[in-house]
Amino acid sequence: MTLEVTLGEPARATTVPPDLRTHLTDPSTRAALMIRQSVLTAVRRLLDAEGFVEIQAPIIGPVTDPGVRGAKQMDVDFYGHRYKLMTSAILYKQATLLAFDKIYYIAPNVRMEPLETFGTDRHLVEFHQIDVEMAGASRDDVTALCERLVVAATREVLQHRPAQLGVTGRDLDALRRLGQEPFGRMTHAAAVAELAGMSQQADAHAEIDWSNEEMLSLEAPRPFFLTDYPKGSRGFYDRESRSDPGTLRNFDLIAAEGFGELCSGGERESDYRRIMSRIRETGENPAKYGWYLELAREGLHPSAGFGLGLERLVRYIAGLDAVWQASAYPKLAGVRSA
Image (cartoon, rainbow, N blue to C red):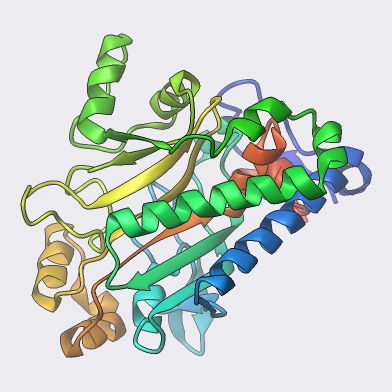
């Protein structure tokens, strides 16, 4: 495999994947992939024990998640129809709740990330996501579950992969402290105010950008949930608060130590009229979502869920410099690879 930057330049100094043979034979790659295996073992064990059913997510579909933060979708020719590679299976998670009340996917996602993500050390074009959805659940239900998953995965790795953590050079004391006290919480408005106190500009009506998110992460004593994003900053599927209009019942999980976002989730809109209104507010054509809207018209279950990035979680637990080190075949924006 030849890796070369084909477009643009790194936004800042960053680690770059070597040739494939060097990458796969590097002891740190082997260690990271073994840690990844233990993370998946812990995730499946916990979710299975709590009554979740694992479903294999679709790889292509007529439509996919619109709320992917600047990334573009990739088209494929499906017998003369333009289908999309999955950027996120969130709409399919809502649909699958028609069969089961508690489901999860562990599936690849493909996003054509902007070139500037090359230098962030935390974006991949192809990555895997641990997607969870629960019928009748609240945001508090799924943030608690997300916290249990991260703590369980960390403890599994500490117990079964100490040698591999030594190879990656992880601070074991930081991992051992995880779970000794609950994860923190901060609203989007409070984060904007905190950044202003650090002389950083942040838009009160938009998502926290990568550099500001990293600053919050570096300042955090432990992982925390960033909640209550403003309406319009996320996809139409995140439920708007009924008691606080203009605020979404959603969250991100931000890791400490500068590792940044691990997970996004929230409560979902399930009412057909509200979904239609939200789609129209974005300026999109509802016809794009025909199969999904047909299900919504006939009735979707109220639910909440999240998507937890597998490579990001492995990077955090292993203490890796960059998210590509948690993948056997990493693909970065603007870089040719296997």
